[in-house]
Length: 365
Ligand code: FNR
Image 1 (tube, rainbow, N blue to C red):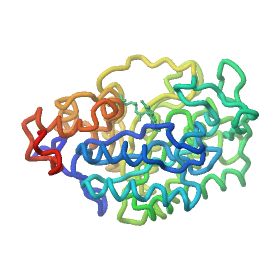
Image 2: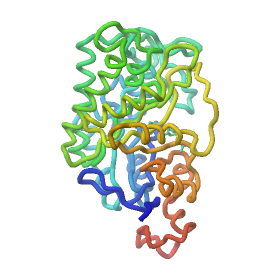
Image 3: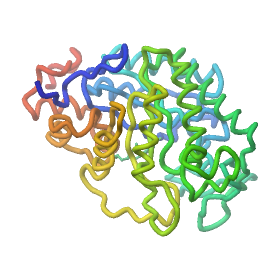
Image 4: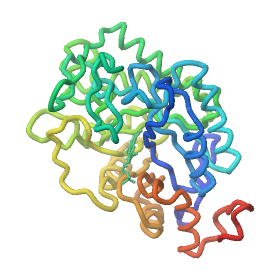
């Protein structure tokens, strides 16, 4: 029988109830610049579970304090962070959704103000901090980028350990999925792309060397999550920069196979973010699906893929799964506009049988 967007998906010992996945989206809503989850995170993520999502992924959650994009980002660098996130995972699970966390490090794109404060580089005398990257080249903001320091071998080992500790805390907090954020020009993508990685040690140069830190982190996170829980990796399938050596879909296919062999279950396929010179050829419905499809079709392993980008309609999400083009329909902005997108999709597609409308809300549906 053909799967559709309401078909459950079993990965290891976890069964996801349907394919609607809340894409990680920063909320910039930590109150004391301490990385601790607040009522906002509990309500925001909880609402999407109530609304019928199969997977609820947290925003980029920093494994180190200096790995936050803004001071208002979530973190998981201490046990106090774990304890603040545990109620999120517990409530999401109580509503039948699978709670996941995106483990992240912003690298040279850290230390910025929130979008509604301009997304400007945040200076040291204004609560900002020095950023780290594979090479000492700051993100080319128009003016005043924060100082960017090259990680040495010990610094890289610390980052790998931070992802490991983050995964351990995530598991202890009750998250069933860990997604490693290796996309959008943040630290791990900075290692992958020759645009930002100018190293000549074992973490730079060849494909094998540039991908080493992501492989090490995937192994560490797989180890901490245990055999039963899924591990996802979000990547940018292309840098969208063609006039110099860059990261592209062919390398993404190779990396997906390598990560799958190390225990990654699903590649969450996005694109771009490494450099302001990027030229995205077209943005619209399913605009990144072609990359997810290529990874799915060209990999030797049977790694699963999620597609994200421009999914806004019930039939569209359903068709992605029915036509066997991806395993998860990962939805960002549509979920901001409609927390009940999956429930509404079920009504629209005549599939009320396939979702659990909370008893409290049944008179509204
Ligand atoms: C994002 N995006 C994003 N991606 C990610 O991997 N981690 C994150 O924390 C964030 N944060 C974030 C915040 C906000 C407000 C938006 C709108 C987006 C990207 C997001 O997950 C998604 O990939 C894109 O929005 C494209 O999908 P949609 O919105 O077209 O469904």
